[in-house]
Amino acid sequence: MHVLKKIESRLASITGVMAAAALLFMMVSTALDATSRSLFNFPLPGVYEFSEISMAIIVYLGLLWAQYDRKHIRVSLISENKNKRTKNALESIGWLFAALFLLVITVPTIEGAYSSFLDKEFRWGIMQMPIWWVKIIVACGLFLAFIQMMLHFLLSIYISFGANND
Image (tube, rainbow, N blue to C red; front, side):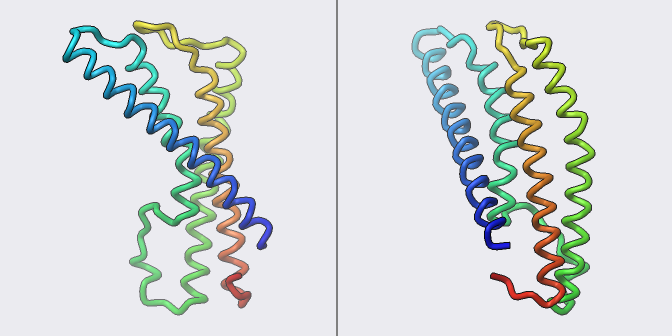
């Protein structure tokens, strides 16, 4: 289990850094665009399109980072006053349902990313922007989140049956 936690940590760090870089890029490009519009009455072409792409990267690669740090919103009403073993068992059910939901939305996302790649899909706007690679990133992010939720499900089961939390 320790090896799986280490792999999760590395993947969460890598995807988190990528999401943070996309956020930084979006912030800097938007600030430069606003400055250019204000001072020179000249909008920077493509900033809007790049911002849309950056938001998808931020959300879907940031999933793993947020989950690793347990920063997602959690509802603890049912498990709040339960003993540790029952709480872990209820958590494991939650992780399983989250993993199944992610799997249900991952499969069509992968199919869409594949067809987008084959078509070399573009977004038409002020600039022609290829978006097939972003759809692949979204599909990968969802698939990795599914794997991560399954890992948390297995860890919860492992812990609820008396194993120590190493």
